[in-house]
Image (tube, rainbow, N blue to C red; front, side, top):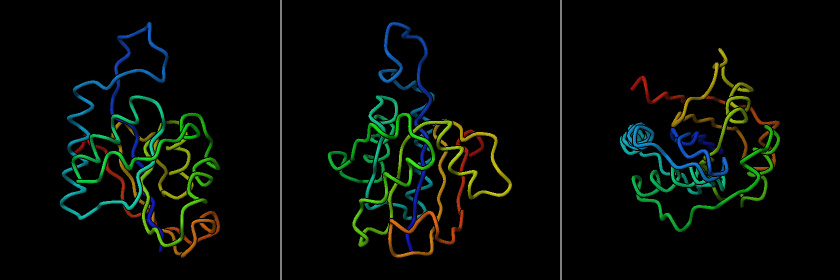
Amino acid sequence: MKTLYILRHAKSSWNFTELPDEQRPLMEKGKKRTRKIIEYMLSNDIVPAVIVSSHAVRAFDTATIVAHGIRFPAEDILISHNLYHCDTDGIFEELYPFDDTISSVMLVGHNPTLTNFLNKYFVPQIDYLPTSGFAGIKFETDRWSDLPLAKADPFLILFPKEM
């Protein structure tokens, strides 16, 4: 069994028009909503074995906040440039290289990719994964490379605004 957690980055600021998109910082409101996800993770013993974050500041800062909150070593967060602009196949490509002894991974990234990926599995589909939105899917396989063909159980979706 493999478990994939998906976390969209926290709400970021559009006030810094001089910054490239990848450099936009988080808003305090976004950090607060992310703390709701951390509380849920802690109360449900969710600590992924691996955290992979997009290289964008807003995603990496979100991953770091979560890592500190769940006592995951922040220096062990893996950074992916692929997660910034990939399509849904790119999500799988992030996971293929992992050793099959690893049972759970959390990806921290961006829309529309995350919403599109989740809508492959969630019924009914979601309109969009909001900032700091969190989801979980269990795949009935022992190999990360078999995920696309494995039976999937989308077991968790949280919208922090509703928590």
